Length: 334
Image (tube, rainbow, N blue to C red; front, top):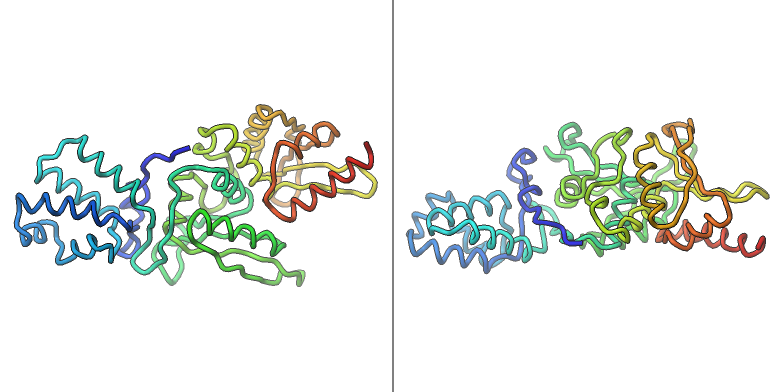
């Protein structure tokens, strides 16, 4: 599914605390050149630079030496439309071309990041995983000593294998490979995490994809961008969410149970609705008081367990191993 033009939303002025916070777009030098050539028919170079408050920066944009701040690019289009008497249709066509041609994004001193222009199964899966087990810093609340805008994204898990495959997803989607950090818990057990500081990725997940920031309790729900997508992508979102937050429980000789537990019922009810369309039937939501969770949904009937395993895929190597154990148990008891 194609994602509509999100350039202006990605670089809203309300997020810009200082110059380095502005998101820059790379690879549109030929579009800047076309606008600049047309402007010179009506204005001298000095007039353009003075009126547009730039000095020798157009050449760097045209040669793709520097990225263009998106807010500046938008202002340039307004200036071009006014000076060159361009129509609204011409303005929108050029702005759309910038969106389609600009693949990489960054900040003044940050890495160049590739941002997706469409939702595929990898992005749908990753959104599900982040909703389940990730955390996005709230830019209006959380700050650190390095920047006025906190762009931190955190994902934590006990298994290093989880992060090895997640790193591959980030590389494919964003041309960014996160570092894997290992820390010790209070019980002296190792756990792993990503701590990603990238303004383009953070804003893309927050603004374009609708991932909630800060404390997720009471705000966890399936993003609109997924709810408005086709059923196949919704399935992959559930896959990512289950791989992050779901559980396959084996208790001695008892029949295994597939569960998802959450703080609030809203996202569980949304999963129930989508799962029914896919042919997967959960039981619940049930009240379930444990730490930060309040409710749960379950699958425990043999036929429903088989449907879940057949219909809902998995990419997490730990969950894949658990599913293989469950398949073997189904074969033995059949």
